[in-house]
Image 1 (cartoon, helix red, strand yellow):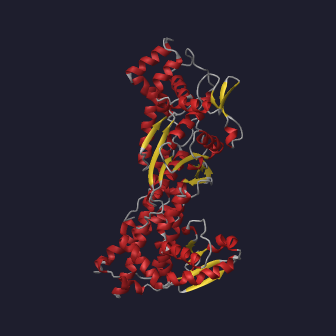
Image 2: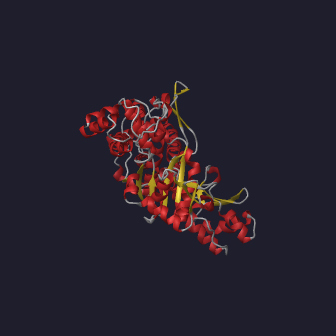
Image 3: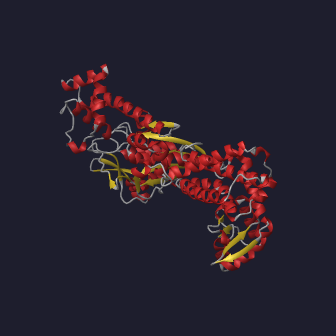
Length: 559
């Protein structure tokens, strides 16, 4: 219906002699928030007024008749400063419901982003420790976004970037060496305790290292000063990174998150991509030496200051690796490079976009979603966390306590740019106060209803479009409106990179269903009316199941 409305609007605009707006036609029409203002609302007049040299209300008035005629509107009104509100006959909504019913499990799919190729990178936590609660939010958002993009027709590839070289891996080696009783070694930089990684996992890694014969020899050689510290790091860090990645993969799998590819930073180094990127910047006069270091002219691309590419020691910075990595991604022909980062990376965006521009890639293709922090609440109090002290709460602990369904839903209950308070007490509650339980229970209720209808001899395969004519209650029409709008909720979430829209939508949709269910008996002696209501309930149940699937949450038939 939204497709038809958008097409009718463009035809009416052309018929009225107005220039075609630059905005996507789908952005010019939307479901009215309150049905008393009609079923659909258009803001097209505001996009056209300036070019048409008319006020928006005049423009809307000229569009009203043309749009109404094309879609068979029951009523068209101009509201406020120039909104065009349209009310459709009940028959149109019955047709829309039947279309959704006929789609079955395909309901929700659109071709809105067909032809778009998207590379989505998220989580990408350093393999220096277990995933914590913040990584869980990043994972939930990234995975749900990937599913929404695919449902909207895009080709999506997900990637995890593994920082398996550099200073953080040396720090992990130093932390494990300390746990093994090696406080000093030839060439080993001294670190304060606050600079080291801590926690049970460090001791576990130390034990695993001792149990591996080849690694045990490296420890003995380090302790006996036969193996210089840099050589120890080079030989041991891949082993430690591999062990940590194994644990990370396991936690993510239990969280229902997977990746098409795992890209290792060490590959950039091995293939000479970092050096090649630096040489390109030098050749273009965009890198210069100062105080023994090599700098990128980041300020030429809107950054607040130039950035170091190579330190005084000759070691490339993380930024140099990131520049090479993003240049490689840009060369893959993707229409969009989406990165999901922590909010503390805000200042990092201009320099990466600058590097892309400097390397002949379109920086506008880089789309960064910044995710705010997560606070855990228990008994109304915040749980204190510190990664360096080893007192942080891991994703594994969250999964063990509340399970993946609750964890994923709760992580998506706020937009990424908002701080999230994760209430563990509410998460464990098995009542309608818990939003996950509230939504899942509605799906289970529909499954029970369908079983009851079968016992009464009502088979949905016998339903026909004419049976939907019995759906005349305002509550039924509102439920139809909202349930059949599901494809555009998904498409909107994908286009705006806002997967949290899906659980928000589900909660509101379920509220409407519970109100309707409590008001109206579904299965009665009136066979035609019962079949009409069962079609509505089936579409609702399918939408809930598909919506939950898109955010990685199960839809049980019994609770």
